[in-house]
Image 1 (spheres, protein in one colour):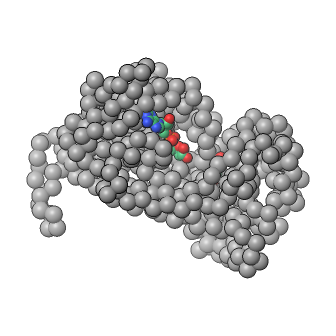
Image 2: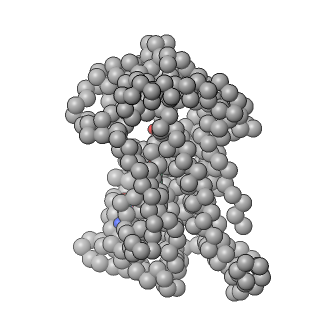
Image 3: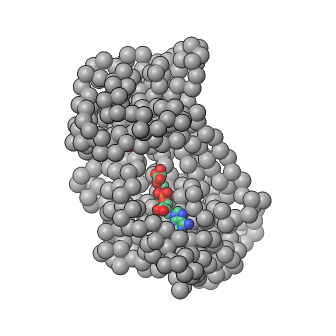
Amino acid sequence: MRTQVGIIGSGPSGLLLARLLQLQGIDTVIVESRSREYVAGRIRAGVIEQGMADLLREARAGERMDREGLIHEGINIAFDGRLERIDFPKHTNGKVVMVYGQTEITHDLMKAHIDEAGGIVYYEASAVRVDDYDTKSPRIIYERNGQQKELVCDFVAGCDGFHGVARRSIPNNKITTFERTYPFGWLGILSDVPPVKDELIYANHERGFALCSMRSHTRSRYYVQCEIDDKVENWTDDAFWEELCRRLPPDAAENVTTGPRLEMSITPLHSFVAEPMRFGRLFLAGDAAHIVPPTGAKGLNLAASDIYYLSRALLAYYKDKRSSPVDKRSTPQSGSVDKRTDLLDRYSETALRRVWKAIRFSWWYTSLLHKFDDDPLSRRLQISELDYLTSSDAGRTMIAENYVGLPYEKFE
Ligand code: APR
Ligand code: PHB
């Protein structure tokens, strides 16, 4: 089997890339190890930056998001019995975020790419490795129905998440990784109850972090910081709601509507970056190249910015008036540049510049809001930093501009 761009993984990265290339007449085949139902059913986060929302609209998969998504113009930070609001439009020249579940985004992309436009996705087909990525015909070796097969491509996009094979196909001496794990997790509940507030609440509390989020006006998502080795079985619904309310300011706590869990799970917190994000004709994107703790709501949005850059680079190779084989342009530092591939050549450094800023914000925001130890000085430092940040325009602007999403670089 042969295609132009072979994609491993049909999560948000793989589907969004395939859809954007499909709209430009570039062939793709996605190889996905799980079933369509399993991928569609995964519960994940749901805060979307302007950049990702625009990319979903460009992919003609944003119509339901614009109809059902919730525009949020701010977040609230709770600490020391206070609730301080960060006004996004005021501190970012009008920018906002959209609350719309990743599960819904996956549905919309599957409908647009597969059901309506016949995009090819091999489900229950596990890629085992990527061969020949340093040649003009990289191959995805995959297993399906007990048979080993290969997909020959011009390019391979590794959109197979943190545990995927794309990154593992690269020899250790060719890749550098950066990692930090956090000594706690997030216990999350999804419940069909109205959210406590019409905007998210991020709470710093001496008992640990808490987050009040939502999927709609009738479905809420809450998290409390828990021990790293805690188990869902240790928590009844009542115990969860009691602990959540202990960590919120009294006026918020009394507004919490409790209800039975639809889902409860524990998420570990992790920061990870792999460099570079390109190896010959193999390109990594999304969780395959980087992981952020969920505190800053950056995981999904970073996957989107990678796909913004990668889709443009592949487009420039296949489509743009740059189709003349070689259009020499001399640049002082590196002599001649093949315009067909210069964006492909700049993909990794450009994507990583935005990745590291989101890694930094997510680590910093996690450090500010979570309980790391019982040292009273740590606690006072957090409270005073929160007090400073939420009472100064500079502080509020720093939080707002990082939360709504730093701009994508001009990439053409
Ligand atoms: N072969 C085929 N498919 C694979 C393989 C493999 N060997 N390994 C993993 N996959 C599939 C997974 O089943 C999954 O559907 O790759 C997909 C990777 O999807 P995600 O993990 O969702 O990664 P990504 O698309 O980059 O999206 C990142 O999703 O997990 C959230 O917080 C994360 O928001 C971030 C976003
Ligand atoms: C969520 O709605 O699941 C959510 C929102 C914001 C975060 C993390 C998760 O920072």
